[in-house]
View 1 (cartoon, rainbow, N blue to C red):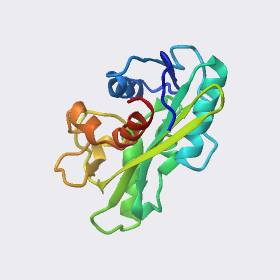
View 2: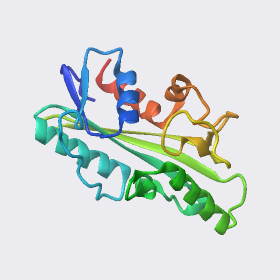
View 3: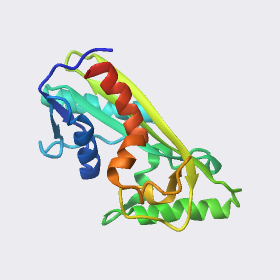
View 4: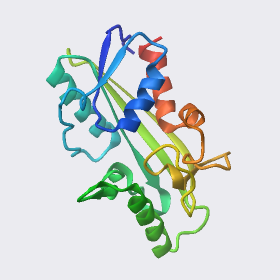
Length: 202
């Protein structure tokens, strides 16, 4: 994998929680992370059908717009009994005319599991793919996932997205109940980031 030796990295997201999480993960390294939102740039529509495809699309757009190396992630929740849904559409399930509502999205997941009479445990995994793109076109793509199960009712107010209904294997708490530092240490994004950091930043 190519070593990253730049001083600035553009993060292709408008998500404040994701920006904070990735800044924390890259804090040990001498690189300034700036988001496309801070630069006033849009995030392109996610038109691909895989996490890797959407991550590449977003990173390529940010790199082209800024002339700087760009990092994007695409992540989501895949529920086994829903044939992998919501998957790449995880954020779409939260969309409302007034912005994203993940309580609504989590409720949809549970209602669809109930309608399908899905057996317990209701298996799921959080998935994350990272794409790091350089201005010369070089790309590094890495992925991580965490297996677990869907629980109800929602538990905890930490984290973001679907965290309050996902309990990772081996733990009694949902991601929504865990302190951020603990979740960051074992999340799907942390696993993908370890691969990226070990390959490109150390």
